[in-house]
Amino acid sequence: MNTDEYQELLSEFNELKKENLDLDLTRGKPSPKQLDLSNPLDGILEGNFQLKDGSDARNYGGILGVPEARQLGAEFLGTRPELTMVGGNSSLNLMYHFVDNMMEKWGSGIKFICLTPGYDRHFSICEHFGIEMIDIPMESSGPNIEKIEETIRKDHSVKGIWCVPKYSNPSGHTYADPVVNRMASLPKLGGKDFKIFWDNAYVVHDLEMDSEKLLNLSKEAEKSGTDNDIVMFASTSKVTFAGAGISFLSTGKESLLDFEKYLSRQMIGFDKINQLRHVKFLKNLDETKKLMAKHRAILKPKFDLVLSILENKLGNKDVATWTYPRGGYFISLDTLPGLAKRTVHLASELGVKLTPAGATFPYGLDPADSNIRIAPSFPELDELEKAVNVLATCIQLAQAESCLKGKNNG
Image (cartoon, rainbow, N blue to C red):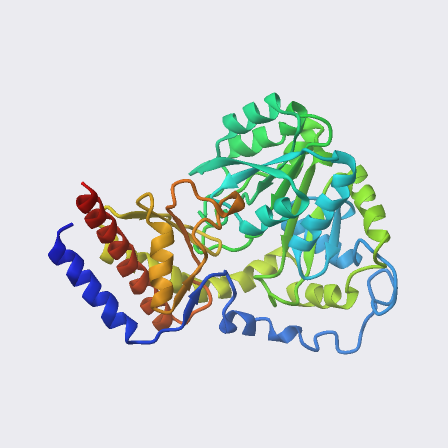
């Protein structure tokens, strides 16, 4: 990188600053067009609140959810209705409370394995409870399972692992069958009450017509006798209304009973009317996939646009690499080491908000300072085009600054 190239990039940066942009790529929010797909939810019950068991959804009772919704959740997660419960609009809330319940049994000084890059809100739960986080890298076939097994064998204070097994946040990778198979046996390697938190957030969120296949962990765990140590989650947050969906949790019979007792201390039950209207609207997994095809038609052009701009502007620059997800809500981009924070800062100066550099690592600390999570879902295509062009310019400018600084220091 020479001085002329740097000045050219700086001039482009200053021209972009004049546009006074206000664009947001921080979180994987559904766009208004996606939310519109679920508008029929409003009024769908038409005054009929009766459940198939004859009870009234408007009244108390049923902390595990209405039978119809438990059936739907079991289809989402590939398990059985009697092992599945239905919560409110947030699967993260169920995760938090499951960990809270387990803290009474685990005590202090515990650790979790956190796969990186990963989901920042999983890490936030650990930080809240004072759980030490051990980061283990993701690979294209899933997490480094050998390193996970070694860690659990050596240290029985490791009590949990966070997983987003299909279209992982943010890389978009799906766990290969051998990885899932070995995952099911992890509780046998660790100390008492080791739990796998299987956050299948993107189970129906395909960007291609042919969905990537994920081995059924529930069935593998039953074979291994570890079903009470597997806790599976999903939700409709990016299927229907992000702020008014329903969530699912499935685990072994004993584990679910224990969690039900914990929840009964603080509540009578979740919103059964919302559960019922979701069942009326989504009906079953097959019908849900038809709805998700409409989401795909909105989302895929956005992902294609981002990937096209990155290829055109950075493809031959050797300054960054990125994933090509076949589903989910994110693209994971890695700059050269040491450039991510500076890139995010430069983009913010131009009015483009990105997820903070380091957010995809425990404690917000990316040791290489290289990972940036891109969320293409919310902006319109014209806004997205501007935002990603800004990002590409800022990556190159950050590298140019680093090169010139190195030369000056040399």
